[in-house]
Length: 283
Image 1 (cartoon, rainbow, N blue to C red):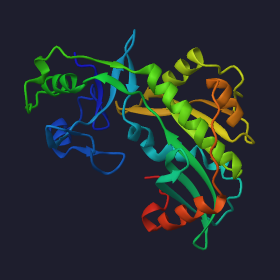
Image 2 (cartoon, one colour):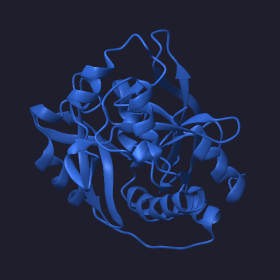
Image 3 (cartoon, rainbow, N blue to C red):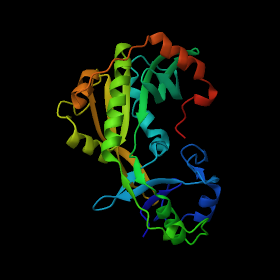
Image 4 (tube, rainbow, N blue to C red):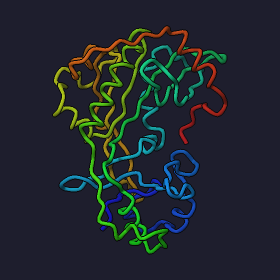
């Protein structure tokens, strides 16, 4: 049995679906366009593996960050952190805004009369894999009775989860970035799956993080679990909310870093990107 749990956003076990149409169209249901993860040897072929089965017992483990924006629930769950948002303001979702230490995946922005009034940074992190998931993907395609583009299903190559590197890398990045947000009195949210949060709690110092989260903290962690929906597909649902500040993330790592940027710089970047296309819609 294939270890791919979701292909192009749909649960592998959902036999009621038109799998031939799904695999042929290669559409990502979360971006409403073709899946951007393609084979290096064949750019015309999207991989589409959102979630795999891993661990003992095997559990659905998300490996594509885009999978987390399902129903835009993660953005809705950050509304309360827009403390300067007023009724009547527009809500925008702006992708890939640069700040010191890198870029932030998304900004949830409150806008009035075309001007940025408030914002929350939202960073997504899923598990990085070691090895290749492609043979498992092709085994799933075979199980679904669909034609394959190669014979990779017969390969003995496997994959694993890079827990340590994934967790350490994202915490270091968050330490850099949250210092920036704290400096301008704004909030930064890290969105992860519950399994990754559990690993972080075991491998790093997390006992000082506040659970449930406290509004006044600059750093928030939102963890989601995968649950089976009535229709057969999976849905993400909130599992835990924790919070801390820049000093708290430093305590997790035993590291120190500096990142400073003026509020105006971030607002200028956001101002240039907001448009009708970024206007928040629940669908």
